[in-house]
Image 1 (cartoon, rainbow, N blue to C red):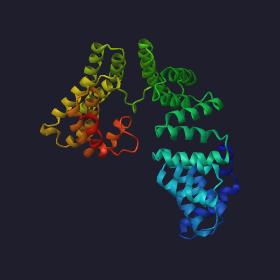
Image 2 (tube, rainbow, N blue to C red):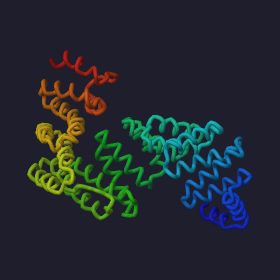
Image 3 (cartoon, rainbow, N blue to C red):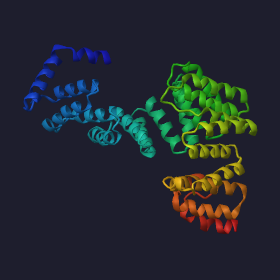
Image 4 (cartoon, rainbow, N blue to C red):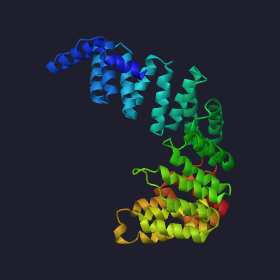
Length: 383
């Protein structure tokens, strides 16, 4: 299709359209042209990455031919291709108002909502596409992504599994489905999918590094320390200058999963010595301890950070750091049974970061209890 389009743009018919359009625009006149002709001009400019010129031609088509549907679709395509997601959503909705059975528009709308992290809307759009074309593979994978990002992991796995039965060689879907399975603690199944994803990728996919990194985690989770370290080492072959991966932190995480605190400490010390953002690295190390169910050591690191930021040189970041660590500290104290510290940090977390507080405690408090009601709920339970 791309070659056909390129051939058309070289044809005498199109070159005549483009000449008439550019001559009129250069002279300041309005080129009174058919909608189809203006859309061809816009399509040509879009193929060259000249999005503003494509927009200009499409706006003229909308002005001269207000009842035509093609300019709506072209404007939606321009915004989508130029990754202007909010504008794309607006124009895609106009396309669908004119033609609610446009499957590609529903797919693009779902994609745009995923990019904007509007996961409920992304799911709705994918469902509409599936209602029109139940076997549409792109709609299936978008539905799986949207469900997973809403933490509906089992439902997401059902859809991932259905999609993979139709597209078993999609290494990107295998990677994302494995990532989703990790939230269900199904690490063996996740690892099996990552092994296949790595074989399919064979170093050629841009996701190969992430596949190896995720596999290092799942191998560790199923008790294969050397395989985990080997996968981590393989990922180094696929890094690029724009990708920042802290291999010391990741190695430390693996060693900690195997209760080798001495080796983990060496890795974490090395990570801190190289860090460009000392506080953020400390926070990541604390989160690693939390992931390994070592809440006492995580608490120690968070408290050390809290003490550090009292110094004047941290005035500019103090509030942001407290906002980040308070919910985690409250959770650590909950896990270690320090009731009063838990209660005090929980109240502080609710006031400065209710969103993360709800994330940490979503499995502890009943569904529907808002964070501001947590203190009243726990008084009867813990005190």
